[in-house]
Length: 257
Length: 135
Image 1 (tube, rainbow over the protein chains, first blue to last red):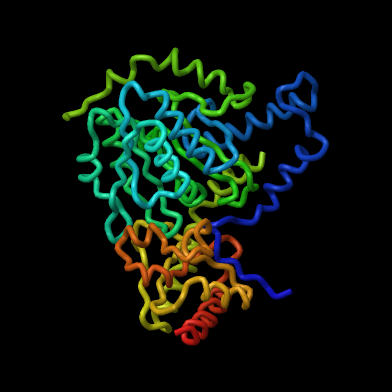
Image 2: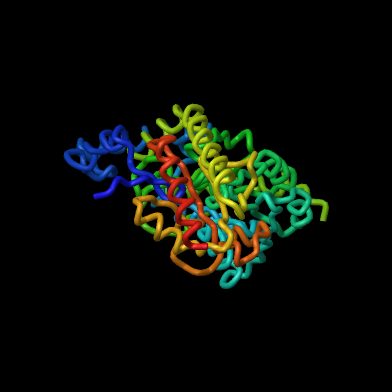
Protein backbone atom coordinates (compact mmCIF):
# COMPACT_ATOMS: atom_id res chain seq x y z
CA UNK A 1 0.00 0.00 0.00
CA UNK A 2 1.01 3.52 -0.82
CA UNK A 3 2.33 5.86 1.87
CA UNK A 4 -0.52 7.96 3.25
CA UNK A 5 0.02 11.68 3.72
CA UNK A 6 -2.68 12.94 6.01
CA UNK A 7 -3.76 16.59 5.88
CA UNK A 8 -7.23 16.41 7.40
CA UNK A 9 -6.66 16.88 11.13
CA UNK A 10 -9.69 19.14 11.47
CA UNK A 11 -11.82 16.14 10.44
CA UNK A 12 -10.26 13.66 12.86
CA UNK A 13 -6.87 12.56 14.19
CA UNK A 14 -5.21 9.23 14.93
CA UNK A 15 -5.15 8.29 18.60
CA UNK A 16 -1.84 8.98 20.39
CA UNK A 17 0.00 5.89 21.67
CA UNK A 18 0.27 7.35 25.19
CA UNK A 19 -3.49 7.91 25.19
CA UNK A 20 -4.26 4.39 24.00
CA UNK A 21 -1.88 2.89 26.60
CA UNK A 22 -3.63 4.82 29.34
CA UNK A 23 -7.01 3.53 28.16
CA UNK A 24 -6.14 -0.13 27.62
CA UNK A 25 -6.51 -1.40 31.22
CA UNK A 26 -10.01 0.08 31.39
CA UNK A 27 -11.05 -1.61 28.17
CA UNK A 28 -9.79 -5.01 29.32
CA UNK A 29 -9.39 -6.07 32.99
CA UNK A 30 -10.83 -2.95 34.67
CA UNK A 31 -14.07 -3.06 32.73
CA UNK A 32 -16.44 -2.74 35.72
CA UNK A 33 -19.39 -0.38 35.84
CA UNK A 34 -18.26 2.76 37.68
CA UNK A 35 -21.50 2.91 39.70
CA UNK A 36 -21.05 -0.60 41.12
CA UNK A 37 -20.01 -1.57 44.66
CA UNK A 38 -17.07 -3.85 43.81
CA UNK A 39 -13.40 -2.99 43.37
CA UNK A 40 -13.10 -3.11 39.58
CA UNK A 41 -16.04 -0.72 39.32
CA UNK A 42 -15.07 1.63 42.12
CA UNK A 43 -11.61 2.01 40.61
CA UNK A 44 -13.20 3.24 37.44
CA UNK A 45 -15.02 5.94 39.28
CA UNK A 46 -11.63 7.22 40.40
CA UNK A 47 -10.43 7.06 36.79
CA UNK A 48 -13.42 9.05 35.59
CA UNK A 49 -12.81 11.66 38.27
CA UNK A 50 -9.16 11.92 37.26
CA UNK A 51 -10.19 12.44 33.63
CA UNK A 52 -12.71 15.05 34.76
CA UNK A 53 -10.13 16.98 36.72
CA UNK A 54 -7.71 16.88 33.77
CA UNK A 55 -10.36 18.43 31.51
CA UNK A 56 -11.22 21.00 34.18
CA UNK A 57 -7.56 21.91 34.61
CA UNK A 58 -7.27 22.59 30.89
CA UNK A 59 -10.29 24.91 30.89
CA UNK A 60 -9.46 26.43 34.30
CA UNK A 61 -12.84 25.51 35.75
CA UNK A 62 -14.24 23.29 38.48
CA UNK A 63 -14.36 19.50 37.83
CA UNK A 64 -18.05 19.56 38.83
CA UNK A 65 -18.68 21.74 35.77
CA UNK A 66 -17.53 19.02 33.33
CA UNK A 67 -19.98 16.52 31.83
CA UNK A 68 -18.83 13.69 29.59
CA UNK A 69 -20.73 13.16 26.36
CA UNK A 70 -20.36 11.16 23.17
CA UNK A 71 -18.75 14.07 21.33
CA UNK A 72 -19.19 17.56 19.92
CA UNK A 73 -22.68 17.04 18.53
CA UNK A 74 -24.08 15.70 21.79
CA UNK A 75 -22.41 18.48 23.77
CA UNK A 76 -23.89 21.14 21.47
CA UNK A 77 -27.36 19.59 21.73
CA UNK A 78 -27.16 19.09 25.49
CA UNK A 79 -26.06 22.66 26.13
CA UNK A 80 -28.18 24.62 23.67
CA UNK A 81 -31.41 22.68 24.17
CA UNK A 82 -30.80 22.32 27.91
CA UNK A 83 -30.29 26.06 28.39
CA UNK A 84 -33.10 27.04 26.01
CA UNK A 85 -35.70 24.85 27.65
CA UNK A 86 -34.66 25.68 31.23
CA UNK A 87 -34.85 29.42 30.56
CA UNK A 88 -37.92 29.45 28.35
CA UNK A 89 -39.89 31.61 30.77
CA UNK A 90 -37.19 34.27 30.74
CA UNK A 91 -36.96 34.59 27.00
CA UNK A 92 -37.18 32.82 23.68
CA UNK A 93 -34.39 34.41 21.69
CA UNK A 94 -31.04 32.87 20.75
CA UNK A 95 -28.20 34.49 18.82
CA UNK A 96 -25.74 32.46 16.76
CA UNK A 97 -23.75 32.89 13.52
CA UNK A 98 -24.11 31.79 9.91
CA UNK A 99 -20.83 29.86 10.01
CA UNK A 100 -21.54 27.46 12.88
CA UNK A 101 -21.13 23.72 12.57
CA UNK A 102 -24.37 21.95 11.55
CA UNK A 103 -24.60 20.55 15.10
CA UNK A 104 -25.33 24.10 16.31
CA UNK A 105 -27.23 25.33 13.24
CA UNK A 106 -29.57 22.34 13.15
CA UNK A 107 -30.12 22.45 16.91
CA UNK A 108 -31.14 26.11 16.64
CA UNK A 109 -33.38 25.28 13.71
CA UNK A 110 -35.05 22.56 15.77
CA UNK A 111 -35.75 25.05 18.58
CA UNK A 112 -37.21 27.50 16.05
CA UNK A 113 -39.33 24.94 14.29
CA UNK A 114 -40.71 22.93 17.18
CA UNK A 115 -40.17 24.88 20.40
CA UNK A 116 -41.18 28.43 19.47
CA UNK A 117 -37.77 30.04 19.80
CA UNK A 118 -36.52 32.89 17.65
CA UNK A 119 -32.96 32.67 16.38
CA UNK A 120 -30.77 35.43 14.94
CA UNK A 121 -28.02 34.17 12.62
CA UNK A 122 -25.27 36.81 12.56
CA UNK A 123 -23.38 37.60 9.37
CA UNK A 124 -19.59 37.44 9.29
CA UNK A 125 -17.10 39.64 7.43
CA UNK A 126 -14.83 38.49 4.60
CA UNK A 127 -12.42 37.06 7.20
CA UNK A 128 -15.14 35.07 8.94
CA UNK A 129 -15.48 37.24 12.05
CA UNK A 130 -18.70 38.57 13.51
CA UNK A 131 -19.16 42.30 14.07
CA UNK A 132 -19.60 43.03 17.78
CA UNK A 133 -21.94 45.91 16.94
CA UNK A 134 -24.20 43.47 15.09
CA UNK A 135 -24.16 41.25 18.13
CA UNK A 136 -25.05 44.10 20.46
CA UNK A 137 -27.87 45.22 18.17
CA UNK A 138 -29.28 41.68 18.10
CA UNK A 139 -29.53 41.40 21.89
CA UNK A 140 -32.99 42.17 23.28
CA UNK A 141 -34.97 41.47 26.45
CA UNK A 142 -35.91 38.02 25.18
CA UNK A 143 -32.31 36.95 24.51
CA UNK A 144 -31.16 34.09 26.72
CA UNK A 145 -28.21 32.62 24.84
CA UNK A 146 -25.39 33.58 22.48
CA UNK A 147 -23.69 30.64 20.75
CA UNK A 148 -20.55 31.51 18.76
CA UNK A 149 -17.95 28.95 17.74
CA UNK A 150 -14.43 29.49 19.07
CA UNK A 151 -12.63 28.59 15.84
CA UNK A 152 -14.20 27.68 12.52
CA UNK A 153 -13.75 24.15 11.20
CA UNK A 154 -13.44 25.15 7.56
CA UNK A 155 -11.48 28.39 7.48
CA UNK A 156 -9.93 28.31 10.97
CA UNK A 157 -11.06 31.83 11.91
CA UNK A 158 -10.87 32.53 15.65
CA UNK A 159 -13.55 34.85 17.04
CA UNK A 160 -12.95 37.62 19.57
CA UNK A 161 -14.11 35.50 22.47
CA UNK A 162 -13.14 37.91 25.21
CA UNK A 163 -15.27 40.73 23.79
CA UNK A 164 -18.23 38.43 23.12
CA UNK A 165 -17.96 37.07 26.66
CA UNK A 166 -17.81 40.57 28.10
CA UNK A 167 -20.91 41.62 26.17
CA UNK A 168 -22.81 38.49 27.16
CA UNK A 169 -21.99 39.16 30.79
CA UNK A 170 -22.99 42.82 30.53
CA UNK A 171 -26.45 41.92 29.21
CA UNK A 172 -26.91 38.88 31.43
CA UNK A 173 -27.05 36.46 28.52
CA UNK A 174 -25.46 33.00 28.59
CA UNK A 175 -22.54 32.44 26.23
CA UNK A 176 -21.92 29.01 24.69
CA UNK A 177 -19.03 28.22 22.39
CA UNK A 178 -18.45 25.20 20.18
CA UNK A 179 -14.72 24.77 20.82
CA UNK A 180 -14.36 21.45 19.01
CA UNK A 181 -11.66 22.86 16.71
CA UNK A 182 -10.05 25.08 19.34
CA UNK A 183 -9.24 22.62 22.13
CA UNK A 184 -5.71 21.33 21.70
CA UNK A 185 -4.81 24.38 19.61
CA UNK A 186 -5.65 27.33 21.86
CA UNK A 187 -5.19 27.88 25.57
CA UNK A 188 -8.68 28.51 26.97
CA UNK A 189 -9.62 30.05 30.30
CA UNK A 190 -13.41 29.82 30.41
CA UNK A 191 -13.79 32.08 33.44
CA UNK A 192 -11.57 34.82 32.05
CA UNK A 193 -13.33 34.70 28.67
CA UNK A 194 -16.79 34.77 30.27
CA UNK A 195 -17.84 31.47 28.69
CA UNK A 196 -20.90 29.86 30.31
CA UNK A 197 -20.79 26.61 28.36
CA UNK A 198 -18.39 24.91 25.92
CA UNK A 199 -18.37 21.84 23.69
CA UNK A 200 -15.38 19.62 22.86
CA UNK A 201 -14.60 16.31 21.17
CA UNK A 202 -11.59 14.07 21.96
CA UNK A 203 -10.88 12.73 18.47
CA UNK A 204 -9.93 16.19 17.25
CA UNK A 205 -6.90 16.27 19.55
CA UNK A 206 -5.49 12.74 19.24
CA UNK A 207 -7.97 11.20 21.66
CA UNK A 208 -10.44 8.35 21.05
CA UNK A 209 -13.54 8.68 18.92
CA UNK A 210 -16.95 8.60 20.59
CA UNK A 211 -16.19 10.76 23.61
CA UNK A 212 -16.46 14.45 24.25
CA UNK A 213 -17.25 16.82 27.06
CA UNK A 214 -19.48 19.74 27.89
CA UNK A 215 -18.40 22.44 30.29
CA UNK A 216 -21.43 24.05 31.89
CA UNK A 217 -20.73 26.77 34.43
CA UNK A 218 -22.37 26.24 37.81
CA UNK A 219 -24.02 29.65 37.34
CA UNK A 220 -26.05 28.39 34.41
CA UNK A 221 -29.68 27.28 34.60
CA UNK A 222 -29.99 24.18 32.50
CA UNK A 223 -31.90 20.92 32.46
CA UNK A 224 -30.95 17.57 31.07
CA UNK A 225 -32.57 16.76 27.76
CA UNK A 226 -31.80 13.04 27.91
CA UNK A 227 -33.40 10.94 30.59
CA UNK A 228 -31.83 7.85 32.05
CA UNK A 229 -29.90 6.74 35.10
CA UNK A 230 -27.87 8.96 37.33
CA UNK A 231 -24.72 8.82 35.24
CA UNK A 232 -22.96 12.10 34.69
CA UNK A 233 -24.78 13.54 37.70
CA UNK A 234 -27.89 14.14 35.65
CA UNK A 235 -29.99 14.10 38.76
CA UNK A 236 -27.76 16.75 40.25
CA UNK A 237 -28.04 18.78 37.09
CA UNK A 238 -31.79 18.71 37.51
CA UNK A 239 -31.63 19.78 41.14
CA UNK A 240 -29.32 22.57 40.24
CA UNK A 241 -31.93 24.29 38.19
CA UNK A 242 -34.21 24.55 41.19
CA UNK A 243 -31.79 25.24 43.97
CA UNK A 244 -28.59 27.15 43.57
CA UNK A 245 -29.50 29.31 40.65
CA UNK A 246 -33.03 30.50 41.14
CA UNK A 247 -33.11 34.25 41.09
CA UNK A 248 -29.57 34.87 39.93
CA UNK A 249 -30.71 35.47 36.39
CA UNK A 250 -32.77 38.62 36.85
CA UNK A 251 -30.31 40.28 39.20
CA UNK A 252 -27.57 40.54 36.62
CA UNK A 253 -29.79 41.24 33.69
CA UNK A 254 -29.11 44.72 32.42
CA UNK A 255 -30.63 45.17 29.02
CA UNK A 256 -31.29 48.58 27.45
CA UNK A 257 -34.14 47.48 25.19
CA UNK B 1 -9.32 8.15 30.46
CA UNK B 2 -8.61 8.71 26.79
CA UNK B 3 -10.11 12.19 26.72
CA UNK B 4 -8.39 13.21 29.94
CA UNK B 5 -4.97 11.98 28.83
CA UNK B 6 -5.34 13.46 25.34
CA UNK B 7 -6.27 16.89 26.65
CA UNK B 8 -3.42 16.84 29.16
CA UNK B 9 -0.88 16.00 26.44
CA UNK B 10 -2.37 18.57 24.06
CA UNK B 11 -2.27 21.27 26.72
CA UNK B 12 1.38 20.54 27.57
CA UNK B 13 2.40 20.59 23.90
CA UNK B 14 0.33 23.64 22.96
CA UNK B 15 3.13 26.14 22.27
CA UNK B 16 5.42 23.74 20.39
CA UNK B 17 2.51 22.25 18.45
CA UNK B 18 1.29 25.66 17.27
CA UNK B 19 4.78 26.71 16.27
CA UNK B 20 5.21 23.57 14.19
CA UNK B 21 1.79 23.82 12.52
CA UNK B 22 2.30 27.46 11.66
CA UNK B 23 5.62 26.71 9.94
CA UNK B 24 3.99 23.95 7.86
CA UNK B 25 0.93 26.05 7.03
CA UNK B 26 2.91 29.16 6.03
CA UNK B 27 5.31 27.05 3.96
CA UNK B 28 2.36 25.40 2.19
CA UNK B 29 0.60 28.70 1.44
CA UNK B 30 3.80 30.37 0.23
CA UNK B 31 4.49 27.49 -2.15
CA UNK B 32 0.96 27.30 -3.43
CA UNK B 33 0.93 31.05 -4.06
CA UNK B 34 4.29 30.87 -5.84
CA UNK B 35 3.45 27.91 -8.07
CA UNK B 36 -0.28 28.01 -8.81
CA UNK B 37 -2.07 30.98 -10.42
CA UNK B 38 -5.73 31.99 -9.90
CA UNK B 39 -6.11 30.99 -6.30
CA UNK B 40 -7.96 32.57 -3.41
CA UNK B 41 -6.90 32.08 0.19
CA UNK B 42 -10.00 31.98 2.41
CA UNK B 43 -10.30 33.30 5.92
CA UNK B 44 -8.38 35.46 8.32
CA UNK B 45 -4.61 35.02 8.22
CA UNK B 46 -4.07 36.49 11.68
CA UNK B 47 -6.87 35.25 13.90
CA UNK B 48 -6.66 31.73 12.61
CA UNK B 49 -5.90 28.23 13.79
CA UNK B 50 -2.22 27.57 13.09
CA UNK B 51 -2.80 24.34 11.17
CA UNK B 52 -5.59 25.47 8.83
CA UNK B 53 -5.26 26.47 5.18
CA UNK B 54 -8.31 26.89 2.96
CA UNK B 55 -7.64 27.72 -0.68
CA UNK B 56 -9.87 27.95 -3.75
CA UNK B 57 -8.30 26.84 -7.04
CA UNK B 58 -10.53 28.70 -9.44
CA UNK B 59 -11.93 26.59 -12.26
CA UNK B 60 -11.19 23.28 -10.52
CA UNK B 61 -13.94 20.97 -9.26
CA UNK B 62 -13.33 20.32 -5.54
CA UNK B 63 -14.50 16.68 -5.32
CA UNK B 64 -12.51 15.75 -8.47
CA UNK B 65 -9.43 17.40 -7.00
CA UNK B 66 -9.86 15.33 -3.82
CA UNK B 67 -10.16 12.11 -5.82
CA UNK B 68 -7.00 12.90 -7.75
CA UNK B 69 -5.13 13.68 -4.53
CA UNK B 70 -6.41 10.44 -3.01
CA UNK B 71 -4.85 8.50 -5.89
CA UNK B 72 -1.51 9.86 -4.68
CA UNK B 73 -2.23 8.87 -1.08
CA UNK B 74 -3.09 12.41 -0.03
CA UNK B 75 -5.99 12.94 2.39
CA UNK B 76 -7.54 16.41 2.46
CA UNK B 77 -11.01 17.90 2.47
CA UNK B 78 -13.13 20.20 0.36
CA UNK B 79 -14.46 22.08 3.34
CA UNK B 80 -15.85 20.47 6.42
CA UNK B 81 -15.61 16.69 6.52
CA UNK B 82 -19.36 16.53 6.99
CA UNK B 83 -20.13 18.20 3.69
CA UNK B 84 -17.40 16.54 1.59
CA UNK B 85 -18.84 14.52 -1.22
CA UNK B 86 -21.86 16.77 -1.63
CA UNK B 87 -22.04 19.24 -4.45
CA UNK B 88 -23.44 22.08 -2.35
CA UNK B 89 -20.88 24.82 -1.82
CA UNK B 90 -19.85 25.35 1.80
CA UNK B 91 -22.18 27.60 3.83
CA UNK B 92 -19.10 29.04 5.53
CA UNK B 93 -17.41 30.09 2.29
CA UNK B 94 -20.68 31.58 1.03
CA UNK B 95 -21.01 33.51 4.31
CA UNK B 96 -17.58 35.13 3.87
CA UNK B 97 -18.57 36.22 0.37
CA UNK B 98 -16.96 33.59 -1.84
CA UNK B 99 -19.06 33.19 -5.03
CA UNK B 100 -20.74 29.76 -5.25
CA UNK B 101 -18.78 28.62 -8.32
CA UNK B 102 -15.47 29.56 -6.66
CA UNK B 103 -16.51 27.94 -3.36
CA UNK B 104 -16.85 24.61 -5.17
CA UNK B 105 -13.12 24.71 -5.92
CA UNK B 106 -12.00 24.89 -2.30
CA UNK B 107 -9.44 22.65 -0.66
CA UNK B 108 -9.05 22.54 3.11
CA UNK B 109 -5.69 21.32 4.32
CA UNK B 110 -5.27 20.91 8.09
CA UNK B 111 -1.84 19.99 9.43
CA UNK B 112 -1.04 17.88 12.47
CA UNK B 113 1.57 16.25 14.64
CA UNK B 114 2.99 13.75 12.18
CA UNK B 115 3.31 16.08 9.15
CA UNK B 116 6.73 17.14 7.88
CA UNK B 117 8.04 19.75 5.43
CA UNK B 118 8.73 16.87 3.05
CA UNK B 119 5.01 15.95 3.22
CA UNK B 120 4.13 19.52 2.23
CA UNK B 121 6.54 19.37 -0.74
CA UNK B 122 4.86 16.14 -1.85
CA UNK B 123 1.43 17.74 -1.52
CA UNK B 124 2.34 20.92 -3.42
CA UNK B 125 4.10 19.01 -6.22
CA UNK B 126 0.99 16.96 -6.86
CA UNK B 127 -1.33 19.96 -6.47
CA UNK B 128 0.57 21.90 -9.13
CA UNK B 129 0.28 18.99 -11.55
CA UNK B 130 -3.35 18.07 -10.80
CA UNK B 131 -4.68 21.65 -10.82
CA UNK B 132 -3.03 22.23 -14.21
CA UNK B 133 -4.57 19.00 -15.54
CA UNK B 134 -8.08 19.76 -14.25
CA UNK B 135 -8.13 23.32 -15.56
